[in-house]
Length: 498
Image (tube, rainbow, N blue to C red; front, side, top):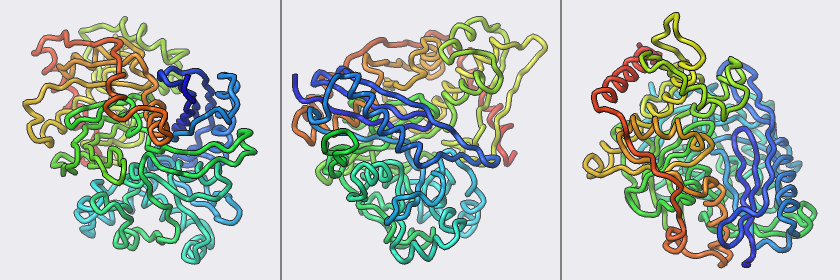
């Protein structure tokens, strides 16, 4: 067996570490959840130390599970929840404030002010993003404005800014490396995706000093080595990508036109557009899919803030199910004649609406509506939101309207056959679920394995992709159109401007 690769997947609600052998099989795993903090309406935070603590703990768990010493590893790949923002003291390594999570909406007013000033066109032209509190720039600025002395310390070069990958690399290397990769940089709203560099005008606009920023590297690159005290040996960190880009890689979506959609806390669909940074006319994002050997490959992305989080709401908020996996069985008991719609705008609506002030709503309730109908509407809301994204992608991508869509899916929700059949029915397109569902971690592992020289190139890796099941559409067109029309009406009534 070739040297194994460790993949760290630092997510929104838990941290996971997997170890893959050279046949892409998981031979060791560790996972820990951590607390979510909601200090005010629309605010979502993580303790920075929780992210690092669970990282080290799950790395050690995975090694123990695999019965391996750290010295046996060829390298580590890192993938992470994107846009979540940290600022820390370079000398002490301590974060100045809790991490502000990608879901957080506290800077919505600031984004609205910048839009009124006419700043969005320039921001979008350079970054491919829209002015929204989802991204890192206004979060970093908020921390500088709300922690005493932070702005002066930042100007003096005493503070470091980073997304979660940068924070973990800094800590794992003992403060020796302050770096990020091009995919995570492309989500900060401070990075010019065309020039592949931080942009001084954007830094001025958001009030973020350049001295705080990490070095931007390729996805497969040298990110230093771990402090030997952490795992028992120094291990090179050789791959980094934001979680959605890592999933795109793990799904082997290397060719232009390939689409993947990941269903975790949120839902994120990416369409590979090759070397072309395709400008969206339908409020999608243009982003970096990956960068290898200095060459960026781009993608159109649609971001849904709430997917699996809606299932968690049924479980934790309403107590309708004990375990997330129970939702499929409950949903199948629903009355098909009821037209119940859940618009899960718990933290606003993402693409293609980008309404930070929208909040969740239920429509079509009757006295006969019960737990089963709510479960069905919750799963169906994910399919409806995906349909909105793919419709926008087909309009933006040249020839996309005529192209046949085959969606490759991954993430926790894809284990539900009920949810995946709903998805195929409402998209009117095949949905392919791979044998390896750990595609996010696998993508990070491939980057590290590629850099280490122990895993094949993109073409060789793509040949290894294996199908578990294809879900094919099985819904009458008139039913589909009626359902989609009902969904669009529900969204219209949910938007804050309505």
